[in-house]
Image (cartoon, rainbow, N blue to C red):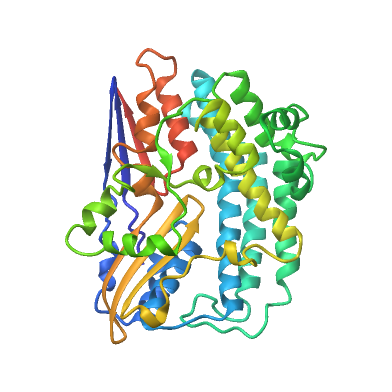
Length: 418
């Protein structure tokens, strides 16, 4: 099935930012009239990124609408798949996308398109990450598809701990230079982050081999006085617990739903849903926000903190997502659903929401609200951050692209600067 992601078009002009999206927000309606099981199996294939998060949200929504409950083990396996996917995506950002975008912003004349491709060391290390991720994904699915509706695996596959430890080990080698749990305990404020960065990312050699690794990114942001670049007043989307689900479900219902999906707001204002939004209350990220606002350094640190949390859980042998707080949110009590289901999952780039209406065992209506619609709202965190970019600043387009990369769209984004 073809990927129907669409494209974002960002046009930066003096005093104005225009964001246009060609994302087909009604694409999921191709499944209207189809059997629910068919939809749960095929819908994640519409998306080239975050397939596990899409599957988690879809399964949760469909199960709620049908009154099904997966077993606790199925939920844990699903959560582990989503967290492993998030770790893989964060490693891609930290090892490939951030270094490329920051290099272009700091020295654009030396970064012609042919030279902006990631170095062989970074690409080879990311290839190791992908192999480890795919091995863990295969291990987690060895006893059957955890995302099958009402899934009830009888035992966790025996190969999971070793596969989880392998992915965690790569994060520790290539990013932290030490056990992830040690990094989390030691790096809890701006001073500790600076000390870690100046030490080269710890004793490990992997990070230092990749153009200084993420520790080098921290050093470069500080040296170039870019820690607060992109800061803006857009607030994080709050955690939408069960009390907020009826309001969210209502916004996704009826003739106004498409407009809400295209330009979502919470409490009548744009909000951001990103790793920064999720990690804003952690000691390190909170300290950086207090010092520099929600600029580049806080965004980079949020990736590091979240990756460290996942890697520490993987390395512990328990695997991520094995505590109730980290499980993908289920929809309202299936016994009360009445054919309507809401499924939430924290994808790598932010909150993903699926809403399905079912009659019998067929889908009447399917709607999806993705993180990009929040973050690339016409007055959202990307637009607000770019508005602060002065027309005469050097390397204006490269800096704008760096901000977009830091927020991280889940589809192709074309930037024009005039």
